[in-house]
Image 1 (cartoon, rainbow, N blue to C red):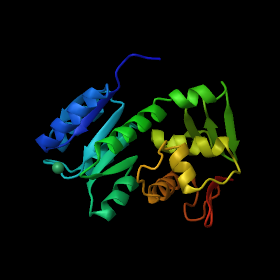
Image 2 (image 1 turned 180 degrees about the horizontal axis):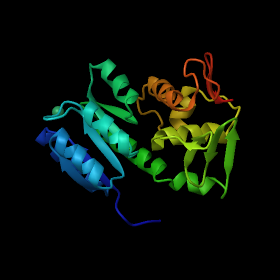
Image 3 (image 1 turned 30 degrees about the vertical axis):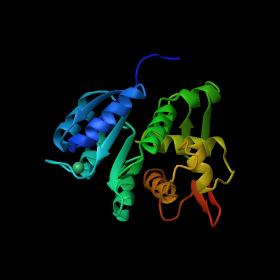
Image 4 (image 1 turned 90 degrees about the vertical axis):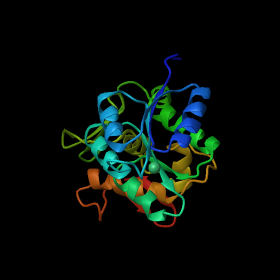
Length: 234
Ligand code: CA
């Protein structure tokens, strides 16, 4: 459809990992840019246009969390964080502050590439444009999902959602009332099939969305938890 190469920013200080990543990104047909510390990474992420950011946590000058928080203030570029395997809490924390996903180090290249692929495919809108009719708008109370502008507003004010957050809200809104398990959502919205995903990725992302769309995130009115089954849009 378009022959423009997708561009990925790799923020990583370990040179051997950078070489491995860039070699494989290149082979997979991606363009890339590299930043070896958090500060440079943040500058590049903000001043340039990328299709995805691969972000390490332990970085010189500014850590990955700080970089992620700062990027999220101004940009909705998909972010995949690379966390050390044993640090379970780190993954959840990364998702909480706005990362779209994480991979654990040492990562499997095939898993990483599949995730990069699926994140880019979803977020570039190639899928949603194909299956969403023009001019489609769904209203749920004071919440409005505009499928043309790819945005969500509440009481007329546009909410600042990342692309992943928008994908989830729009997916649930499009299938209003239908309950989706966390596995369903990982397949449908994340585009993952059996890629060792942590189902809590879904929970944390939903809770992050609730902070933005609900009047009272602890007593949600829009995205409802169906105990033991999953989530649905009221
Ligand atoms: Ca590092």
